[in-house]
Length: 206
Image (cartoon, rainbow, N blue to C red; front, side, top):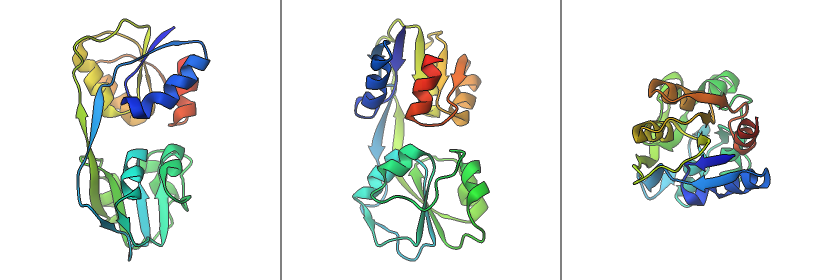
């Protein structure tokens, strides 16, 4: 099966390797690129919880953070793995709702570090401070490859794929990506049961 991976090349390589090991022909066609934004330093001292919702945010914090929050929560095992130290909480359901369901209350002073334009649910529910660390730019490829399936790992990738006008079944990493794809008219064949690399691979292989 010919599968299109739409992540940036540096982030998509583990997925490419896993799918090739499964016998698929993999084509890399990035539909998004990431641009750092926000302050050069992020002071974590004084926070009861630092909440990180993506591996990209975790990597940015790795070279910008000063001080240390009392506890750290990460959405998803990929985010947890990208942090410099293991987090105190990784919710079973890798969504903002899943984190809210497991975060002890009262949470105290919370800092949410994530993407510019991230969903505000955590910020509103926890009265959290927010620091944007990167923005996602949607790309328009000159030509989208012929394939049997496309892998979508973010809502922005789903929107960018819809903009190509191609009609391919898609695999989605999770509910937010699925919702964005369906709003844009993309057919979601399967959604990953776990919102991580293993989940994507399992969803592709069926």
